[in-house]
Amino acid sequence: METITLNIGGMTCGGCVKSVTKVLEQLNGVGRVEVSLENAAALIIYDAGKIQTAALIGAVEGAGFDVSL
Image (cartoon, rainbow, N blue to C red; front, top):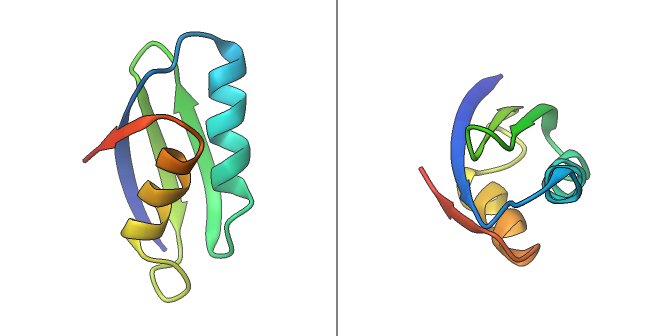
């Protein structure tokens, strides 16, 4: 399992945190997600053999948020 932290822009409330968490948890290969509104970041533990970083970023961007590493 790999760990990555994504910086997420555009989160303004707990609902945003839930949205980001949900979209990431639904991806095949994602084991655990911790999203922090205060830190504007998501800590993701995932199986690099099943999903690539680009797919994680794309999922969050698809939900309407800005993402950077």
